[in-house]
Image: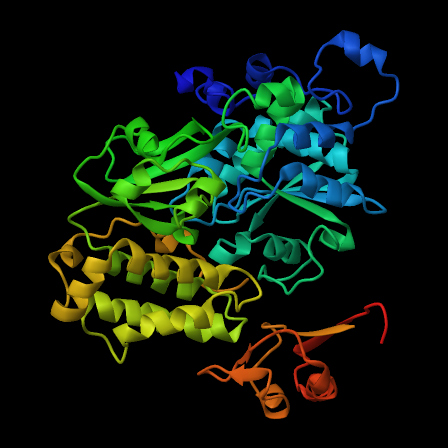
Length: 440
Length: 71
């Protein structure tokens, strides 16, 4: 049974929020130089600690970033550690994807696992500044994290103090260059690169930006080692990952799966379809529509999703019912993404509203001046033309409509809106109270 | 030596000088923002490319000259 070795990260989800319970469940924070070899014998043996040894272990484990891009976590650490001078580390817990809940779950229920990861990674790369960033609108979470940091300070755990920071609750502000810019006193908008954060980031220091789930895995690898980590998942995509399942399933929520579990198994894990499905939206609004038959057997790995024409992203899976209209829903999401643009780059500022309007035109056969036939022309005009990847998400989502639902597109073109447009929207967008409409 | 162009899309405000001075490489999209036909500049157009970079009113056109073995 594949699920037998899980949960790992989520093993203490019910009762390990406090520091003492956390240590009882997961074990004490390992010494920085002794990753994967917990226990006093080996600790005594090594007189000189080499905190950077953790980077070797993380590389051997094959951990990849769990924030969406899937970049090798160890290599990212090495590129920061290898630069001269003191470094900075940023834990990215600003979960910008509206359909993702896993980072909030980790931070609210297992904050110390993430904080362990920050402390260990800070030691490994030689950081003397550490930040944990979440949306500034999430008051309860910010208070919870402040309490957790205080508990650790009282226990003398973290030599580098971890600063919990609220950043703007905007979609593009959770991008790593935006966070670095915000911590440097800016409004929290993406910046042009180079320099990238690992070259010059917070206060000019080489900066490691890792997603909070990535850091939680790192805290587990430091305790149990790379071979333990590889005992689940695929050789090419080892370990476990958190997924957020929503839409037409009977038990929506956050689940920990082996890397390589199929998308269909993920739906079944969430209780199975609540009604007949036509598609899965994997990867959230940075992902793609996949027809349900094709998606069912696709393994949840970056390579697997890419081969199927999609993207794994941050592990979002939305089950989309047959009776709903994917074109209307995509138009709505595209409008949201257009509004969430920082408005810095012309192609994003002008292209995304035009794309949203054209999609709405196709969905509802109306609108003011939008032209449905324009969609395929607009996509290449926005894709890869921004300083950040924000416009690429909207482009990929729009393009996948045509590959996943050619018949629907055709029918909308010829007959206008379908019955599905009358259903209440299923794809989540942040409510007004969660959104910041202005910059700072 | 290879010469490539890049646009800083944050700095660019679509004045279109680059397309004016280097139409072989730069086209404008429907909003007036530059689209590079190919980022690599052919040898014969290098001088024009340098002029286009200097002429950009928002300093948004960037040139990268990578040294090869010989010139």
